[in-house]
Structure formats: structure tokens, C-alpha cells
Length: 479
Image 1: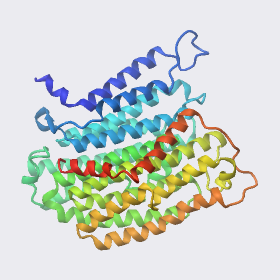
Image 2: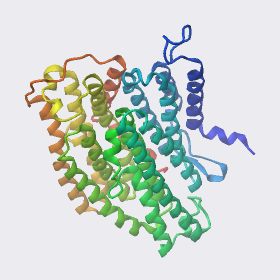
Image 3: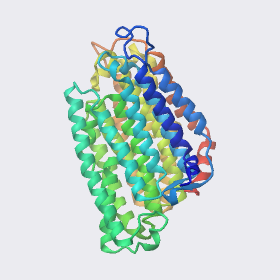
Image 4: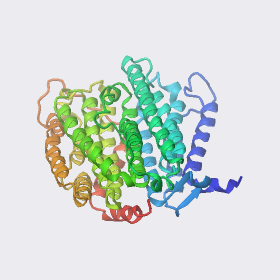
């Protein structure tokens, strides 16, 4: 065996090194200095520093490369997506610092970082898969630790319930997806992405294979009608885990879905575009309608994420390099905006135990900086100019429009106006609604401030730096 092939997997090897260092550190460092005198304390600084080094080492895209007979494939666009997911994970680690300092979480810090990075490693394998078995291994490597993260607060009833719902629906969706892969193999005799298009003729079994495959992926992205787990899991899981699930997990699954549709199911483009057309409309519309009546901010953001997944599908349905560019750019901006919102929700909940919309009445008068940063992030999610979210929506609408989906783009535009209502409800609560007992003023810790600073900088810089979109567009042709 030629072991030099492993050198192609630069991002995976670097991340495995980070996981091993944290694993060893967790063995020899104490989570509680008062119980184990004389031993250093494992805190957020180490994983944050290691992730910074990992991002710095792997940030520069490398050339197109293959390994293990084509089972592993890496190109600059895959590299960019991995870097985006790594940045999102770094922000999640920063926003998790305050939560990890809680007494009942202190002994589990190492487990949180290890599980989170394990899911990220699985996403890396999914993104670079050139074979359906490699893809499925990556999918399960990402899904199983995620269920443990969802149930991380095991002594909270809602967290345990969320974990049970997530793992059960994940098992069923993986079973459907695997059955679809068996039909693909049965009708083509191969699972290599490069060999499949020549053997796909759109017969009945292959159409059924696509339906099962798409159903499994629809769960990972929380598309309607595969979304029923989302609100309960988002509400029950720890807010930092919810943030990670809503951005990093969703972004990786959306990219992989487009790559496989583009590479494997290209001969069946008419069939999968028809399915995706109606799923996109349902996801955007139903999610917005349900979001209008939510009072719990976690459930509101859950339906917001379902709606955002529908917008991401506009890039997928185009099936073009422009659509791929728009999708990656959308995920990048969505990452900063959504994590900015979740950072504020997390710190407010940890300090006040308040999570409903009415609880945010008068937040601007007691915590003006948090209210302002929350507003920037919400405006970006809503697509209000001149914030970065406006440009991400513009490019993804343009990709779908240029592919001929004019009515779909119009429906998405109408829904964008509809989504303004529930985003602005939060802004109205913070700035206008009176409150007899507003959330008390408090100072955030330095890690939370760093998280908010990165998110805000991302929203502002991406709204004026066109070089980012141009760079992604340059590499999209090498998908």
C-alpha cells in the first residue's frame, strides 16, 4: 500500500492531530482544579488555539488530488468549504466557554470538544468522498457524535428528549439513504461517483434510489417534509450545540447534496429538479408561516433555519457552477449571521434563564451593545441591504433565475418579505416594547466578545469585499 496517499488528506490529518492532542490533554488535565490539586485545568484556550493553528495550516487551497483509487477526492472548492466549517467550529468553541464553566459541565469539557471535532471530521470525509461508501462513513461519523452532543445536558429533560428524537430520526433517515445506495449499486454495479453518470439512465429503480437518497439527505438539511424533528431538537439541545447543528452540519450536508446531484445524478437532472422545486417551495413557505407564531426564540430560529435551507436549495436546483458559488457564499454569510444570533441568545439565557420573545423587551436599554449586534445579525438573515445577507440572497436568487426557475425565485422573494416580520419582531422587542422587568445589565466574558466580534466582522466585511465571492467563483469550476 502506498502510504503517501495519506498526505493528500491535509485537512483531515491536521484535524485528527487536533483531536489526539485534546484527547491526551483531557487525560492529564483536571476539569476542576479544586478536586485535583497540582494539575493544570483544561479550558477553552487550548481547543481555540489548536483550531486557530488548524485553520492557519489548512487555509490555503491545494491542487486537485485523489487518493485510494478515487474514493477520496479533494479540490479547491472542497477545501474552501472545509475551511468555512472550521471557522464555524472555532466560533462555536468561543461561544461555548461560558456554558462550559457551569458546574455540571466542568467535568465534560473534553468530551464536548472531542465529540464536536469528531462530527467535523465526518463532514470532511463526506465533502471529499468520491465513493458512496466513503460518503456514508463520513455521514455516520458526523451523525452519531451529534446525537451525543444534542443530549449533552443529560440531566435536563428536554435535552434527553431531544437526543432521543434526533438519534431515532437519524437512524431512520440513514436506513432510507442506505437502501437508496443499495438500489444504485444494484442497477449500476459501482458506487464510484466518477463511474456512475455513464450508467445512470433514469429507469424506475434509479428514480426510486434517488428518492430514498434525497429523503435521507433531506433530514440532515431539515427540508420539508423531513423537518419535524428540528424545532424540538433545537429547543432541547444546548444552545451552542443548536448553533453548530444549524450552521456547520447544515452547510456541509447542503454542499454534499449539490455535489452528488451534480456528479452522480446529472443524467437524471429533470427528475431531481422537479422534486427539489416543490421541496424548496414547501420548505421556505411552511417554515416562514410556522415561524410567525413562535414565542420561544430557539423554536423561532429552528423554523428560520428550515427556511434558510430552502433558500440554499435555490443554489442546488440551478445545477451550475454559478449555483455552487452562490451556495458556498450563502453558507459563509449564513454562518456568521446565525452564529451571531445564537451567541447573543446563549449568553442571555446563561445569565438570565430567559429565552422567549417577550423576555427580550427592553434589552436595548440594559444591554445596548448586545441588542445592536443581534440586530445586525437578524438584518443579515432577513436579507436587508446593505448587510451581507442581502448579497448572499441576491446571488443565490440570480443563480436560480439564470437556470430558468423564474416562478420559484418570485415565490422565494415573497417569502423573504414574509420573513421580515418575525425577524423584526425580535428587533421591535429589544428597542420598542416596554418591560417592567427587563433583562439585567451584564458584561460578557472575553470569549463571547471574541465570538461576537468575529461574527460582526464577517457580516460587515463580506458586504463590501467582493473578492471573497470572486475567489469562490474561481474555484467552483473545479468541483
